[in-house]
Length: 258
Image (cartoon, rainbow, N blue to C red; front, side, top):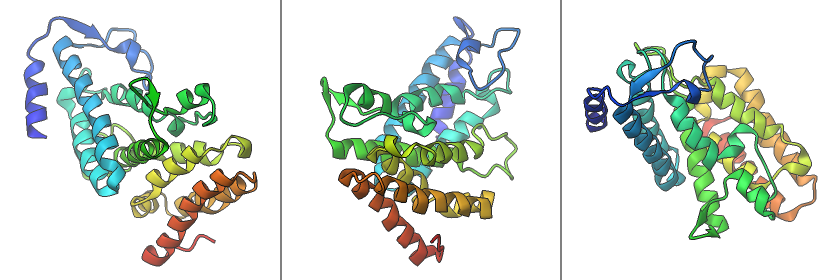
């Protein structure tokens, strides 16, 4: 992480060419004045954001511990005052734009797996012009969802920096998934849901208490039941992954959601 910080810090010495970031910062009210930053810095920051996405995909599918390590690095850089516009606005949107492309379902975007347009909408990746196999798709979505949790469930109560990606974003991602209409639910919803939940329950409950438990019950009891009610065999099998996870939480954390 120190090496990344050093490279980004060095790039800030080059003030020209300068880039106005205001058109790309959708998380903030558009300012009346340009948000100018060093062009070389923005270029390297963009590379950093792409590298984070690749790391979440390649490592995080193995579990939340890998995702959390990457998340610590990501948030530490993004929250650094030196790397904010005017020292106040974090460049989290540059990373979120890439998240939105690769895992749209975290923002409530969905589509059918058996249609080209549907696969494009949910971020089913292509390599050499061909859709990646389903198992590869599952690994990508699991890693990205786990990475999203690692970013959004960080505790900044003892930090001197502001949280660049508050945990309300985690709540929103969970909510848009579990509120998907029954006939629009796909196996990818359960893949992303498992990535969001597995390994992060204690942290989530620590932030939201009983409200978190209520949302977890919706996600792990009511949502799978709605999916199973459609009669779709593949969807029912995908829902079972969440049912199994619910039993694991009951065994390991003594958390009963039924």
